[in-house]
Image (cartoon, rainbow, N blue to C red; front, side, top):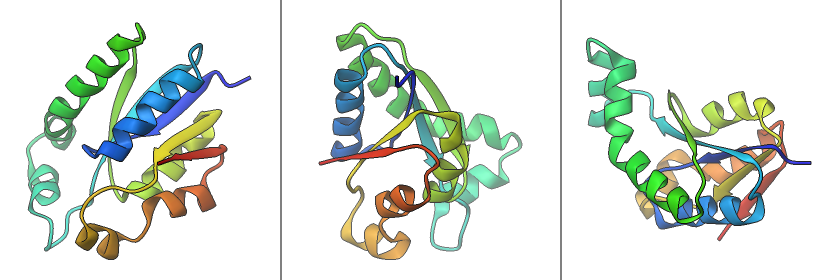
Length: 139
């Protein structure tokens, strides 16, 4: 029985579809939405700003605030409460690292622009290959 489901999310349509799928397919499960704030690099201003903040965890939570508001709206449509978590790091690695705490992972097939996909690779594929829990990829 699947009792804990992890849904990694960014602000993409595919991530939202993954959340809706998880809510429909696992109505009795505890759903946790995780938003990964990327590691700082010279190409990414936002994550660098978070890493340099006085309180990086608070800055990361603030960064995820609008996304989590939308997540709660979607969950409310199904009359479900959702746990939200923010992690800082490489998206695929961060999800893989916490996947053993869950019975399943539900993720959107892709997100971001073409340039993002070329730079970071196919995150969904990396999660499928490395996750300790079974992964469902939603299109």
